[in-house]
Amino acid sequence: MPLISIITPVYDGGQQYMCEAYESLTAQNLPDGWGWEWIVQEDGPGSPASALPADDRISIGTNRKGGAAMARSIAMSRVRGDLVRALDADDLLPTGALSRAITTLTDHPDTSWCVSSCLDLLPNGSLRPGPHDPPAGSLEEGVMLAGYRAGRFPVVGTTLTAYTDLVHVVGGWPAVPASEDVALLLCCEAVSQGWMIDEPGAIYRKHSTQATAQQAHWDPDERAALDDLLLPRLEALRNLGWSWKPKVPLADRGASS
Image (cartoon, rainbow, N blue to C red):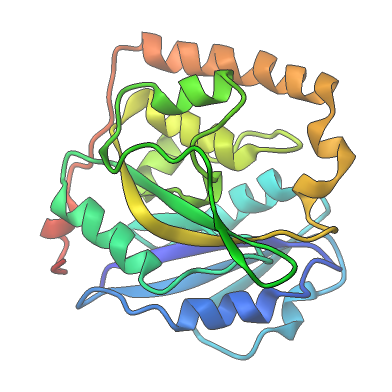
């Protein structure tokens, strides 16, 4: 049975909304023949994933404190799925999110990854769409990188769904203190074709304790260091003149869209 693997890092103190994330996952209706697994990685001590109910589809691992990028990368060692998708411990999957991603990549065999629009969940309970969504359909070459350089990245990085082999090929989530999801997406873009889904693929919870609400996340020196690491890597990938496509498309892996 084809699987989609959902990867979630969580640290002690960051599990407040995790059971809601689980409920949004169990509410997903997948295409015929598909299943999901949830790869939860505890970043540091404290057993934050112990709040989750027993479910054979959940795999829990623990590493010493190292940040989200390290936790996500270690979690990849347990992935069994054909596709990989990230989900932060405080976010939600809207109805149909996984099915849309699977169907998109099944119906477009030359496409190696997809992203989607996202809704911000504000503290008052209202939902707000993102401001920079690109047009739906096959993405123009370099559109994500152009948005990154302009300081208005087009999508939320955790909406990325990609072939597992592609994530392995580009090295997973780079070892950076922030925006590792954006960095992975840009690496995928550098060597393969993506697709934009205009229906929401994530509900991004806005709250005062989230990482992106902290001043350190926007530190200019750290951001400059990220550019110094990431941009040469993207240029090197593009200069290879090589592109990645799945050897066995999803449509040939025993499931229908």
